[in-house]
Length: 365
Image (tube, rainbow, N blue to C red; front, side, top):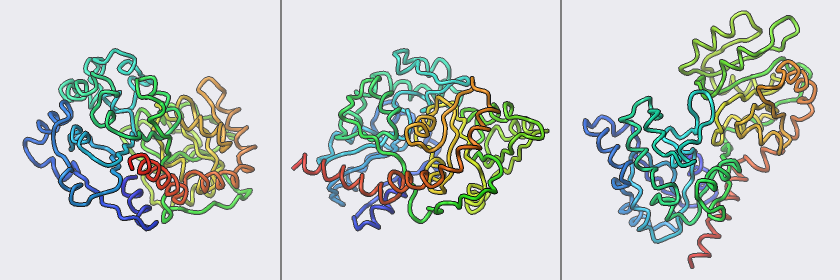
């Protein structure tokens, strides 16, 4: 997403410089784990201030500093500073607010040693300790969040969670991810030949794909389900799919995903955590593909408020839900594409960015 934002702003005529530190380039150093842990726990560490001084930007936009940059340098930035929170890392050791199969808010609710107690980062208490220490004072005391002139969150749900944890609502802006123009597949044709539902994403516990497959209807009249993706639960997904109208495709090319979106009734999104902004939702909207989403993930909110599909829950009868979706989704395809163009396209993103940056520059003049 960072690279997409840079490309979009450059195409719009802005001068942009990306200062990045990539884990893949750094972890060959034997002391990297120790240095990264100290940076995370204390906020002291690598700083882009010298590079920023040479570039002399009008606005600084910070994305993910974990774990390769310090955070305290942000206090010395003399121009408007924006930061985007792509997940819940300032509140939660694993960044997901998810543990043992369900949403977990122990740490932001005040039990801030819980991430260490349950070894929430990579199943290791040693690895969880630096993040636990960093989060103990609460998000409002984080050096970067305290300095930021505006904190971008990806959804209203994220804004609610961070406000409850102590970030003042007026300091936040809801700014969703977008699909850059060179990846826009265009709306798929609304044909009567749509045959089944589609899942696209990682096959991991928080995505609840095994649960979805286990609950999927069987029998001659059951709708087809195609699953695209890979991950640690792929074997479990394949085992659960046996004997059902379910095809596990693994990893496929982007062009194949676009083609599958064009021939599907709808995208299914069963994720069991809140999510940030899953890009597959923007991709589905671009393709004109309605979405069936399970609470509590944020997509279940969007399909209700945007009118781009249907929200559901595990308490509802999945067979009846799928039958209802099969009847209503074909008429939503054009609307989904309009929602994409208005909210999740590159043009919409650039307009949001320019408006926010201009507002902050006026305020600092």
